[in-house]
Length: 170
Length: 170
DNA sequence: ATCGTATAGTTGCATGTGCAACTACATGTG
DNA sequence: CACATGTAGTTGCACATGCAACTATACGAT
Image: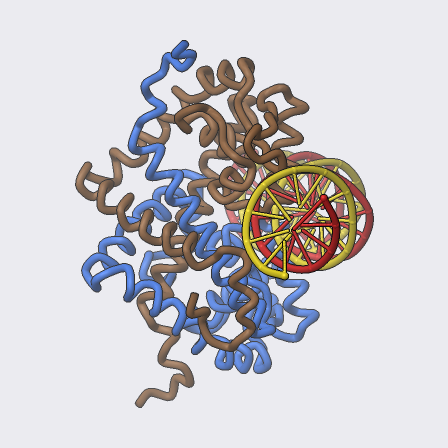
């Protein structure tokens, strides 16, 4: 009967990991449906735009942006292509390493973010403030940051281009 | 008072949300690369399989599985199609509601999970035990569960019918 | 009973994404 | 300097996913 001989199926850690995926996916969908109503760009596009907007200096290397957006270099190339066609982002060749490129918001991109961010921030605040106390939110952010940094460290071997954590706002 | 046009860009909550996406994406990639080495199914497939394996009774309605796997009904249909072709999952028509279907692991599916789970669990334990104390992990799980439940409650797929600019009062 | 509406799931089509191969530049070694 | 090796980013191709439209079943009203 008990064709499942592994009690490990009940392990709480598997639940935690499953919850991480579910919460991220669910939140993404939630943002997606709201965004759909306001005619704003897609969630993936918005994720890229907001990371550019939140970066001090306003520009990011393609590879860094790819990491932050959880995309492969190829996926990011295409995503930035689309944003460039829309006039929201522009590429700038890195002068010190001519292989590399920076992505930065155009004036139109900044405008769009300025127009979209209040709604988005309001929704985020509504959710987090309802679910968590400030301390709980800080603990959550800390825990997630540890997971992210672990993944960064163990994924593409050398990902240290970002210098310190604090340089990456998200 | 600064010249920054949108001070809201510095909001910590945006960072938290960004971390949620990054940590989930990073972890998914991490699992993906390890899984690639062991010749096991894709991460998306594995996510579906593990959720089936961990469900008491061993079967889930397609719609429930779609929600858990962060997929649309259409996406899940295709995913289960692939797993069915591989002989890992089978469909069973729900006797009480003939519109619905259950998905359940086949014997081969159970075998595969029994073979794959130890490695996966070991990796998960390695990560979580290194990053968190048991208390911290429980807090993290609790926080994520709240986010997931919030998203579940507010998504309902028909909520988009609100059409208003702000959030859905639903 | 019959109709109209709602729900579960599946398919056509378009798009986004990843992997592998490729180009362009950089860096180390003789 | 020439060459080999490594890195940043882009493209071809294949696949997975979402949206909208559709089928089949259930449920409620008259």
